Amino acid sequence: MRAVAVAHPNVALVKYWGKRARAGNLPATGSLSLVLGGLATETSVRFDPHLARDRVLLDGREDAETSARVSACLDELRREAGVGLRATVESRNDFPTGAGLASSASGFAALVTAGAGALGLQLEDQRLAEIARLGSGSAPRSLLGGVVLLTNRDATTVCEQVAAPADWPLEIVVAVTTTGPKETSSRIGMALSEQTSPYYDAWVETHGADLAAGLAAVRARDFPALAGLAEHNCLKMHAVMLTTRPPLIYWTPATLACLHRIQEMRRDGVPVFFTVDAGPQVKAVCLPQAADDVATALAGIPGVLRILRSPLGEGARLRANPD
Ligand code: DP6
Image (cartoon, rainbow, N blue to C red; front, side):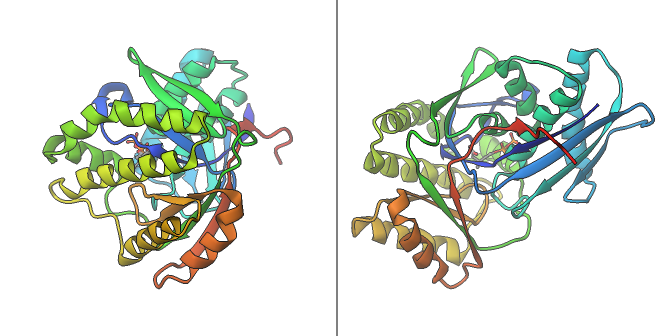
């Protein structure tokens, strides 16, 4: 009754910030993302008749909030399998946790994949996506690989692959500017934005057009169109964050310096654009021939601590021979 799964974090080009209804963690909008194959989460789930409660270790540590979310996902899997056994969950990231690198997305995608595997469940993709969503709204996107579209249909989450990694081999250069966890989690931050930002309604109203434009750009492999659209959508989300009370200022001076440098490079003809989530790290998305120059340029910016590089990756999967 044990299985191990690997999943990669993802970064949204058209983002999710806000929920439609609190119950079921349903996002207010759809989103479009890239899976970062160079960063990985590995999660082991073992159901055990001797346990009285679920035990969850994230990078070796227990955390009450994460444990509650993990148990909510496991409860759904237990219901599907008709078992009541509790589980030990051990999850490790090979990148900084909780710092705006979507560790919750890869974590919950790996969790539900391993959990279903350990219980011998063969769930439909959509059901697995719904269960992953309970853990994190961005997690269903890490179940698939490459470029992924998440949409709400009625009260369910539907994910589809828009391009496989080989269809459009983009590369992502991540500039890490802090390594600690962020001050305000996405979940708390987006609830505050919904309640207090005067721009929140405009964000939701204009989102459908951004999603359609982003999707069209990916389908046409139109890098300049995707660049302009993704940067606009990212800055619009940060405008909502900045106008939240209390304000959500996720950037550091190094974050902003990276954004300026990336825009400068693009004006000089380098195929690169930026996106930033609820944290200070900058993800520079580029065509592969530009990745070395982008990595060198960002590494030279004061305050950039580390550069991570990633091609597009595959969706969550079970490890065939876990140790
Ligand atoms: C800024 O999926 O972490 O990264 O559903 O509350 O767990 P919860 O939020 P989460 O939010 C992701 C927010 C974002 C944008 C995105 O990935 O689309």
